[in-house]
Amino acid sequence: MQWWRDAVVYQIYVRSFSDADGDGIGDLDGIRSRLGYLELLGVDVLRLTPFYTSPMADHGYDVADPRDVDPVFGDLVTFDALVADAHKHGLRVTIDLVPNHTSSEHEWFRAALASTPGSPERARFHFRPGRGAGGMKPPNNWTSAFGGPAWTRVRDSTDGPGEWYLHLFTREQPDLNWTNPEVWADMEKTLRFWLDRGVDGFRIDVADGMSKPEDLPDMVAHDGPDPRFDHDGVHDVHRMIRAVVDHYPDAMVMGELGVRDGERFALYLRNDELHLGCRAVLADAPFAAERIREIVQQSLAAVSSVDATPTWAYSGHDLSRPVTRYGGGAGGVARARALALVMCALPGAVCLYNGDELGLPDVDLPDELLQDPLWSRCGRTERGRDAYRVPLPWEGGPPGYGFTSGAPWLPMPAEYGLASVAEQLEDTESTLSLFRRAIELRRAHGGVTDTTLEWFGAPEGCLAFRRSGSTLVCALNTSDVPVPLPPGDILLASGPLLDGDLLPPDTAAWLA
Ligand code: GLC
Image 1: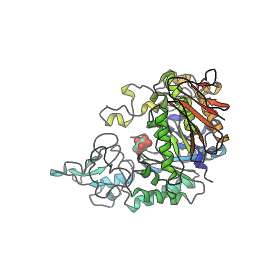
Image 2: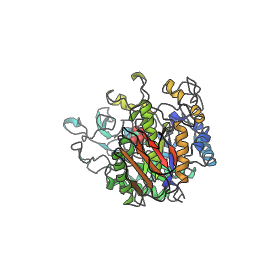
Image 3: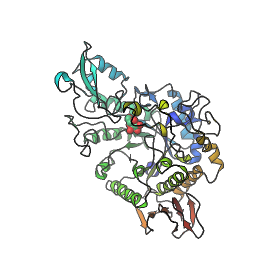
Image 4: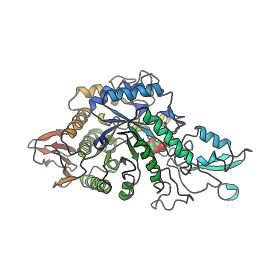
């Protein structure tokens, strides 16, 4: 059964979802206590961000032990209980794997630091001598995604300057060497470890990373090919992952792919690699019908060449929240709601990020409270991703808004109280109610697993389409003037419609 083909995936940023033990940080027991809510929302599968043992230099994407739970989030017993309870609620559970790098606190990296150049311990990572006089310069010109060089120099055994190691992210996230058989064997062990505990699949972090060109060539002009990502060797890694996963009926692998080119992107979705590939293309779309239509067409064309299914996302823990991206305030909320209806009407899988179903905006946090390494590493020029990682409001009242009985790890603004789950469950016009109804109708109207669309003629700044095999038509108005709705019975609208069946600006509607 290819359940993932039309799944609604709900991303839980574990740290910010729900805190059961009162330390201000979300945890696995917190998620367990909210499974009823997730069932009510109607999503099919949860995707948990990393909860493994970690010093939290990148909030868990720096993994010190991929086969254990960090005490801040719980333990393996809690994890097992969470999976069992989720299954009882009809929810599948997928977890985030981070194969491109480890934490600098991983026992392998500590052993690498304690050993010498050319040792088997260092061969699990990318250690190289520096360039120039005294090896003072990094081995190549690669930059880290968080700013500065992608190389850090270590001390040698006499405490003098030694080799350099590669890290595409923070220096606490050394890149693994995927030409090393031990790295492969360890990944296989990790996959089986979690699959045997009952998980329904994985999200692969930086799924276009891992493999590096052998000679580690310099990066050329910034618009040229990027040797750091999407190197051909990565497909062998995905084939290995898939071969293991295929031993478990129904398990699914989804990858985070930064690959822009449609043909290169499709290679990852060949039938022995990833089931789903996620690149948040809708997040790049301005609120303009023509552009949205173009992006949708391109994405459908890319996946159809390999007979795969598309995956849609308009947000995530690395992206500004849709409400804010579309201008904030009432207009931002209206546009985010409209785009949500477009996304849920498309064929394929849909990824929601926790809090978007509440229409939460980004939070403007004071400098001194920012925690994302991006902020400190790039010399405080980029504010980082904390603004869209603020904990979820479950109830109206401060200070913890039902998220925690303690102090939330990032402060929650008063406006989050007004947007709480409790408030929105009571309100039939709320964004939460819109999402619940959309998820329900999406399924009821069929055609979700088909990957073709029929476009209808629409006025300038508008679009209208129907999934092949579905009875549901979606119309969107991104123009400044109200437009007539296509014929049909109105099933759902992202905002109030005008008399005479007019679709106002910043609004989408579903018709049967
Ligand atoms: C991915 C994650 C991001 C993390 C990075 C390094 O892009 O989504 O949050 O910082 O990988 O692991």
